[in-house]
Image (cartoon, rainbow, N blue to C red; front, side, top):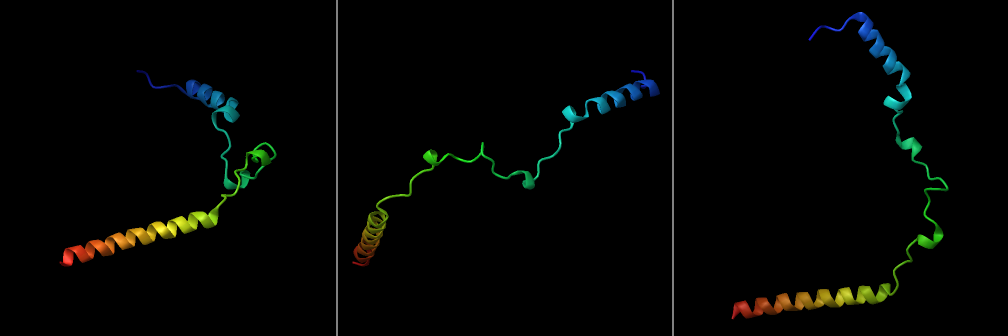
Amino acid sequence: MPFPTTQDLDLVDQASADSFPASDPPAWGSFHAAPSETTVCPPGMVPDAPRFTLLRIGLGVAALGAILSFVEGMRRVRKR
């Protein structure tokens, strides 16, 4: 394989310079991440807030109480 000549290197450099925007796009930083009209979620697609929050909290507390009661019962059975 022959070593490239200066003329070959000049052709490569020229082709690289000619294709600069396509071959080396500018980097995107966080300052480009501003919301626009096309990237914002439309109001109809925003999920509603969860309903029955107090009911869910109550069920969670009841389930936790049942688990703790079960664990305490198992401790008492093991002590016998």
